[in-house]
Image 1 (cartoon, helix red, strand yellow):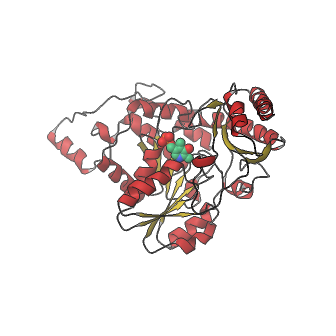
Image 2: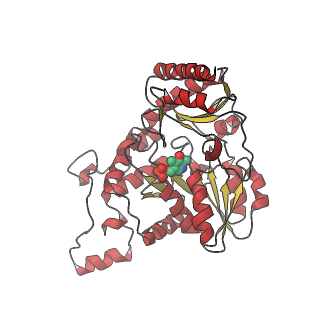
Image 3: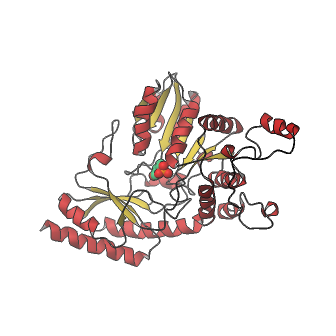
Length: 390
Ligand SMILES: *Cc1c(COP(=O)(O)O)cnc(C)c1O
């Protein structure tokens, strides 16, 4: 079966739910056991079956099965947000004295977690150039336990050579984690050497800007058990409505993503030809420096891209952004709506690789509005940019 078909089938068990196509939303803390013997038996395999609400319900298990299918991994664990998936995965594999290699272009709250919580626990982080590839070997230490990747990089969209990094990491006894939120359907982490793949499911999996959700998917039963055991020890328990919303969104992910990517492809081509634009950051574009790696490792794009403008005054850029009809100002992405955020200045922090564009930078999410309307919106925005500049 093709992936989009598997995503439709995964985790569905209508025979358990009176034939209903979708699983019910289980509201449960206490689960009743019919006998002392059954209760004791369930305690011997704490993460199998339905035992207590905190360990998950059939709604949780359905989502986790479907995400494991999406990612092509052994098994998944749902978390209460994408960031909780990242921090939960890191804490499952790092302890005092360990060393972490973190990509310099990581999602900013990931970096903040390393610099505050992990450093406080005595876990040292070294940031590395997203383009390091096999050169990451020079940074590996005997105590390096995890190499964390995110490709393309947050806000700046560098594509990483994940197979080359994984080969080095594995040879040195470290595991490879990836924030696979941008690739979602189009990057198969476990065929590229990734051991732990993370989704900010809040984005394209939920897909409607109405829930927070994350997932951690493991390549093997041992890695899965390590993640599950650690998360269970922390006691975080994502809500059951969110599980359902994630599952509901996932069923239509392939068709939505196709439209987001098609619109982004059209808008980025149009933008890169505009005189106001210095550079467009979107690996599916042939002109993008990461295009060859993207073409080798990804099977498609999504709606998220960056733009670097020619130098312009902040007031002119603000006037352009404030007046958009469709590209609304807001964090997150992956919902049906178009969004934009300014990314210049302090929002891009680098310590291992240079990033200093001459002009202001922006990040756009192409939503499911008609592409003609979105292009018109951008064109009128350039009118405001010119007006405010003169
Ligand atoms: C949004 C995002 C996250 C965090 O997800 P939340 O659900 O908002 O916590 C992590 N990684 C990337 C790449 C993201 O864009």
